[in-house]
Length: 295
Image (tube, rainbow, N blue to C red; front, side, top):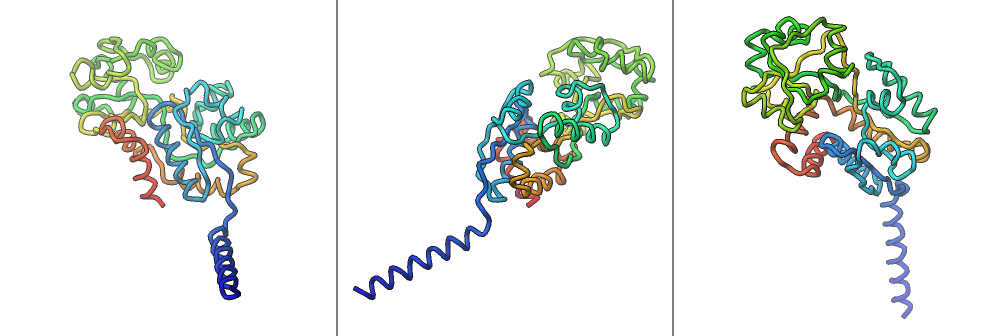
């Protein structure tokens, strides 16, 4: 009987020591990770979630939030963090005038988010998902069009696929013409945004207004993205935005997310988006594969 008691006590002691060894890191809270409702944000949000799980946190995924609601979600505590863009923070959330210097935009949003919302911008990645032009590769090569300045000089040869706003908005053609000069395009026709690259591929147009991380830009034999050589379009660099209260309690969260940002750039974002949008792979599969490659 005594021997049985001693064995039981020894087993209990061994279990306690084992649990203590496993629990060298204090278990963190449940971290609610959000994302916006488009491919790039969903992928990056999932990568953030994987990084935090790898750091020992339990993650609650609250992805696919409408862009108009995600800021409210984090300020109300429905989520703890999500991927955001510096230009969006500056102009959409803070309602400030456009700034084209990337470092200045980051400085302003970091300072104002901390002051106004008690939110922290962590390190910005090198993903710049800004506005601009995609052009058919064969047309770009035929006329030597590499930059928006080149486009302006050859505009009379170019057919534009528009979504109906580009010609009128101040951050579209009117603003561009103030900086680059007049664009006398051969034609401008309106198509649905969802088919704009198909329109180019079908030779119905030569140029469309797009984003610099569009999945179709992975098809470098078909499309090229024009350099904004006079810096008209604002920077939209991707970075984690996190509730400051959470970071103060668990500063290692910053280390985990900053490691992700350091591994991301525009070319990588294009490739990741293409795997989901063009190759039809699942977001969580693409995110896992990428995260495993940077661990």
